Length: 134
Image (cartoon, rainbow, N blue to C red):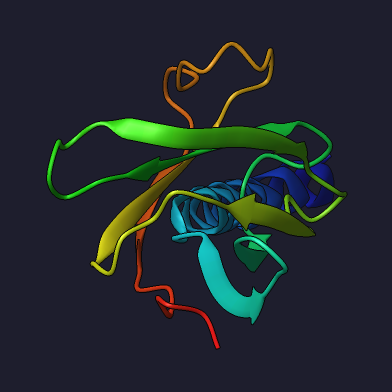
């Protein structure tokens, strides 16, 4: 009987420590900033951008909006489904752009309604497409 009680007394701190460690690891993994890489190619009429994105909600949807620095509003937008790591690697066409530095806002949007999901990830990247594209 004494051995069982000692075993319980010894196991409780180990179990609590394990639970605490797993909780901290999960919080850190969720708080990591998404990674975004944008590459450009010249298309026939516009610029093609490859969006290589990772770190959002797995097997869900991420919306993106290109924000013009002149009018500070989004005028090119879309969404892509994410894979099991919360990423996607997709092409999109960027038309009607002037030479400037733009912001691209990415956010978890599980129902693709263009509104960021509450409590989920958002990330803003800068973009300077080559204009005119040669």
